[in-house]
Image (cartoon, rainbow, N blue to C red):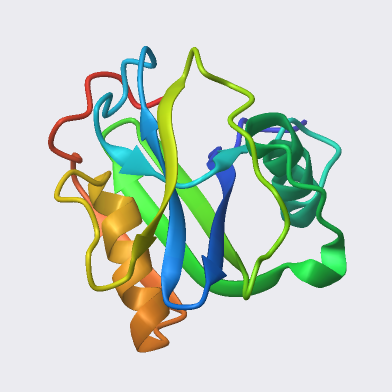
Length: 154
């Protein structure tokens, strides 16, 4: 007889860079950190790998065609929030030069490149931490507790 096992929510995040810039998208109408910048990202839908989910989400959100070889895993974050534990994998595509387009204007009201030394003040806290860890070469981190400003972790 099988017993219920602990479940975790898996998600993939995309760090696109060019020169000394990173692509960020400002969230809107989601109920989760609206008005803050984040990264193209999404949950796995089942029967797909983290890379496959990232390729799908990149196409759906920013019209970027990526292949598995494009994606370099650079950070893993285990987020333990009350009643909702997550495993977030962050991939980077360096020196991205292809065209992007906001394909989800109902969820993103700004999509643009920011210099790493001139990031906007309002970034989803776990994303800001992941960007900092990416720049420092830290591969794994743990997050415990609530993210301030989150009304409903999606």
